[in-house]
Length: 84
Image (cartoon, rainbow, N blue to C red; front, side):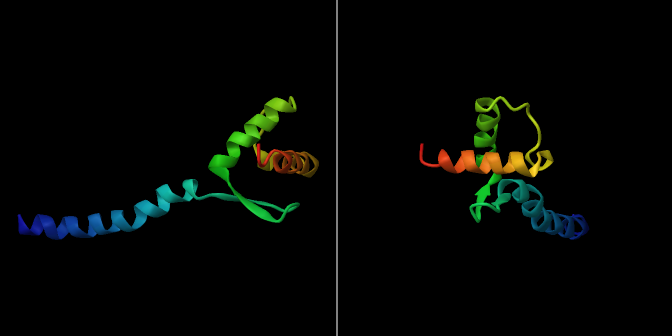
């Protein structure tokens, strides 16, 4: 039984060290707005992005695949809706 715990300890330690890096990255992702010089947390920002697509009748597309002009349109829209 003792040798079992000796083998299991490194596995548990490695899991404890790696798990926050794997699960925490998506939760804390931030997107930089180069026009307004600030950061936005993407999980929350995605809600606004989907609303922008709907309000402006843009087809759904990943933000990073949009043209610079469309990205600027989004950031302008986003900052005009910041406190609503």
